[in-house]
Length: 163
Length: 196
Image (tube, each protein chain N blue to C red):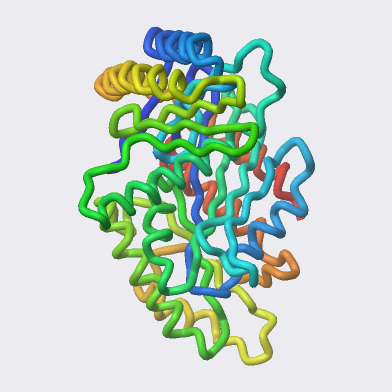
């Protein structure tokens, strides 16, 4: 497959979580996520004071799709990429930056977090996460999926998808 | 390729419903959403135009439960079928683990089915993939049409070599919808975890 599977666990995962935690502290953002380009969550942290986040699956999917569309737009305009993306509403904002070729950093912040800080620390975090992602891609863990897993998953599917 | 999150012990698969415009891709997802119990599905997101035509994609996350300590999820997507939304279709195929090709049984849509399959092949090629690299299931939908074409005729234009499993469906009534999803899921699981 051309699309490599970005798997974070062990030490790289812990370091990614540390970066996300620090970014939350420095920026005052509510939620920080590292997602892959397919829209799956690789790691996330929430500020202790933050209310329950929106569904992360949905958030990650929409951000990844939006980023993919933005990248296609950049190419259309002759740019290699549009790196960061900021959306701001009346109360909530969203910061998205490329964490290397295969992942994205997502920060969700409210009106109490200064945008300048979000951008500054977001950029630093994205760079640190890019290095972690590259390292993880270079040393992929062995997948431990076997026929027992397959049979178990099929049984659950049968159970869930009963007419 | 599936995404595995060892830290959270999650395995995620991406299934894409492809096919010509109005063949019933969104209808498949809507049926699944309506029948899967709360707690096993996430919010269904539809990025559609005002007249309910898919603009970018529909998205439905399904949580099938825990297998060997891993929470297993299927993320279902549809692509916009209309010819001029090809840029969006291409983006949705990124990282796909399995494809349901929803073909239309209407006599006037034979060419659209063939065009859509050709388009899918081209878009997969952009990611360096061929039809052999991704598990594919053909769903021949709208079997309730009074003038529905024979399944073999539809198959002849989308899969002349008979390589992929074919299932009949009436997605508006849910007929064949779960069967199709189960079939493609089985193929995806077999690909990553041994088996056929």
